[in-house]
Image (cartoon, rainbow, N blue to C red; front, side, top):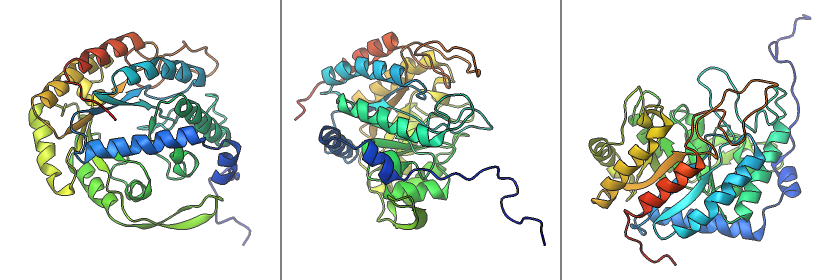
Length: 353
């Protein structure tokens, strides 16, 4: 029999450099490692109620496609993070992988040159270089974990991670979340289902065995102990919002058995903003009001923000505007700075060690 059985729809299989090789080329520094450890612990303290005074704020571009714009944004965010540290723990949103409803640009790791060449090896290395530089600046990073292989390459530079609305129901992602070393937020489903995120939290708390890769890139059996540091991310869904007081109360009751004192983050974008980036401030103000009025289950906010507001269409060969999103529309930096400063005035500051 001459007809091939395997790989009939595969054009090429190409080896990827191992996590060890890329980490050796771009090693984490002592300064960056200390920041990651410190930030992860600070987030845990917020989650488990040891820090009841501050909110975690994940803020930054919907996705990163231009390293220089990312560094410029980080340079602007760092002094704000320092100035507001007694009220907010600010982590820069550094998203390199984008789930698509059908097809489209899948993020910097998948296609770093935005030209369809999909040089994933270069993308993985570039993502690590970006994370390293931003951590070196003293600004912690958060990202969405989409491909279960990617954390082996970059997780040591990540202080907080999300499992997105399209993958919260995935067993693969729940298993992965059970083993990563940082706190993880699970988004509710794209149609608004809260139960899939609650199920994910329960699953990620448990031990798992699954197939992955080791530091040398070899296929390996991964055994995890379960991740105690999990929370919900309410992002709305199915054209409906879920950041209002009644929605937060419902979510709080639903996860009461998970052992997390402050289990709820609000994504101020997506369906909660009715997919209008300019409404993120309205959502954030409402959530802050709930928090100061005593809704202690709220532990954080997420904002999509870039150097310049709105979004632009990406087309191969067409020059892009600097600092404008090519995925979801974002707040501009000026609006972001004003909003964070305004929100901080609502919270009574407490000393931070």
